[in-house]
Image (cartoon, rainbow, N blue to C red; front, side, top):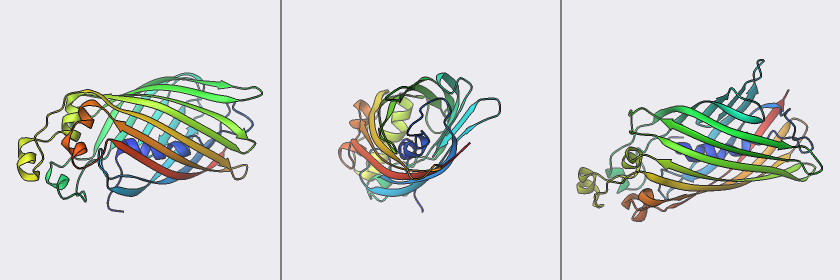
Length: 268
């Protein structure tokens, strides 16, 4: 596959795998380790409307010291906190660039290189064990690439909830929001004077602020004691400076939808 989806959407597809390890009758702390993968369809670049297909890996592993390593698609984090309760640690993200796109106009705009983002996260997870078990999680993540491709930082707030509807079926959903620096928006949504002269789009220099709102819904089915399958629909609505970019208003759409399926093998 010659083109890959951008980071935020690839990670969204991996939500299916990320949550495909919860037992349908036990939402206690003892979630198993797992590895798996997902396949999904998303837009070719941030703000675009042409679609591509991508595949992502996923894994969850609890170390002998009780720390949790999670890796979903292009995002990984290491939790030094509790498996439930307060969680915190370092985070890495591979943010894929914009290059060789299908849109003839957008292809005249500056390329954006793939870059590695680094930072950290903090959050809280609550597990309710009772007649109707459920899990709630909230997390804030701050990453930057230290000016390699964009200047400034990206801050994301995400929440999720999971609960059973059948002995083998779980459903979940989540809401989120992302704030970014002006340097981030300028790199991914800006149109320089040179870009304008080549593409015919108006020049545009965005500032920072609220970048997007997100929501998702997913379902997980336990195939066997060790195998799980899931499906996901992930929605992003670009906001403010990003949504006003001519890249979005004239050539793309502010409504970005990803959908995908995943499978995971769980083990102790």
